[in-house]
Image (cartoon, rainbow over all chains, first blue to last red; front, side):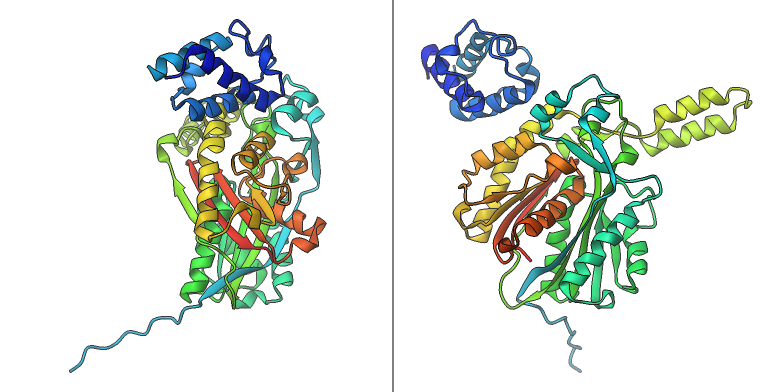
Length: 81
Length: 353
């Protein structure tokens, strides 16, 4: 089981890979769309890569609820538990 | 008395693509044109899809016209006469008649009668389905030469004001001739379907609904023609997709299928000269390239920027262009993968003609 810090670090790497944003910019309270300027297609790519990295399933209908980085970290953490 | 022994057709060890042709219609639709119909911008469309223009056919240019243009070039390059064709397969979802097939009319126009002729409905995977069938027909000895065409007039089944798919789509046709070969030219196809996602891409209405509207019109008092016309416009079936589901399936599942096709061919990504995925969205192409870890030496087809998504025609059109711009690719290995409404998918490695 990865800790929330580990999930955040892993997610930041995925976001960096997809968007080129610095990993430090990916913080728990940041909104994917408003703060990080991530569009819907990048978001799906990030979701697909997060599923692979963390071994979880993030259903399509859940993706719209993942507004902040923290939402995603918590979802992945709960899904792993 | 001994039982009679059946004759069976002698088989061919190998098959390969021996000629390719393309037809690109004249009308160019830019992103600015599209933005008259949907609230968007050139920048937004380029960023999300990689599309800059798409070609569309004039009202008097049919799927069969486009198929014929592509087929004639493919036959010429293959160096065979139409009369030598042992089968004609047209992949299309936009031939406007449920029956007879586009393939039968095409066969007659080309002078290939009485070759067996049939259409296949496998949407954006249709060309790869056609290659799988053409390869099997040639190697089994059922046909010496097979014409495989992907032809689409998607502009007939779009609603310009709709935002999920219409602005992506273009018209066109691509064709290849498959024939027997001394050496392996078409690796095993990895093809399949997932009908649990039948609703992910499809039409807004069934033909039953169109018929029912016709019935209503027939029984109306004719004083309300405008309402009937407007209802008819509403009921005309057009394409829709659940972009999120399709994008995810394409990136996640199709990269695996592409890898399986490489494995089935017994080669590595580094052995490829070219990668020709279905031209659905530049972002899907980019993501597949990453997932497959393709080295920079592999030429990636990105015809979508100019041609949009032309469904069954996209892979042969993109291949035709790659070969025209890079003739040295001829004889090299190309991984091609189609995927789309069904959902269906097909992939194989071929030796480029």
